[in-house]
Length: 380
Image (cartoon, rainbow, N blue to C red; front, side, top):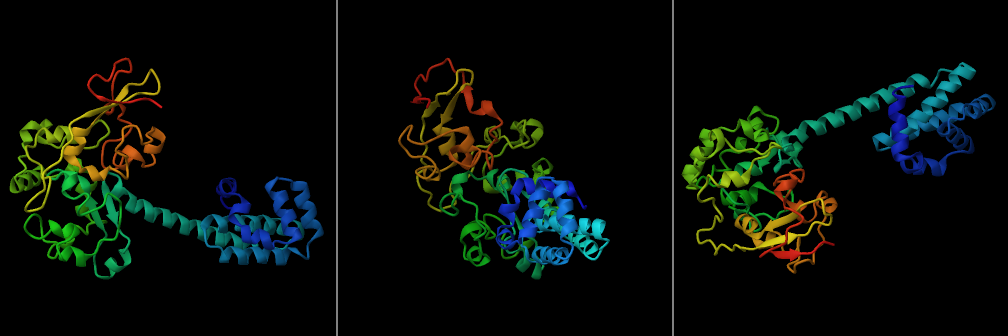
């Protein structure tokens, strides 16, 4: 049988009942007995069923083939076809009838090939988001292809070199992923168009190919910042007046941490004035200068020191409060499991900020030390 191991895994992972509820509701007494014996590896029972029900087998096998064709998902199709294959194989062995097996095996091969193509398509695009903060916008890929354009890659890191997060969030963009961005809005000076107007940055109306680069060689530096053109980065920083001094960076290159992500703390030490607002009359910049000590729940793990100053220099208060964190100290649930799923600190960390695996970036105060002048969030 074709790739029996794959089919067995599908059955184990999804279960016949979960995958084929409709088929189960309509299955005959013979099929139910055959399926149950097949799932339990009761070969003696299978042999008895096939030997004593020769007249029923053609209709049962054809019914499975028809249901597999009508099924929507790959797992559902493959589980049905696997049962059909088993039934047809035994029909051939016991009764010498080979009418159905070639058709079933052909269908299995075709479905596996289609699934492999589907996965390859997904993997082809996933690489463009392999660097933290990169967003691939391909919801309208077919419409774009019709006019000769590729999907857009938005590299957070390119923009973040000269702009703090608060320059865009929350006023221009909410800190939630969305493909709801239209060229009409951009041409009206909204969203990306607030900067991409030919003044602050290139004009979106005249430089489509600058953003629509997915699948092209031009996309490679966006996926691999270590290949970034430092001359262009320096020229952009000089034009924007952010005071980037490459001599203060290791080897005059973008600094990276041990996980291969850009070390923004080190980069900011080489930059005098990153842009915090794109308004002509920017609001007063609000920075909260205090620290919170999160007590470690276990004695062998260091406490977490949270710096409001470092965060509020980059983001506005509304980026976190009240949706991500309530303002009252200790009123929000914080744990590593939920963070890994995007809650609390996970709203940024692991996506556009350093990974949780870089433990000591947060767990920096030995468990035996006290909070001192810091605010204290007691362990739970």
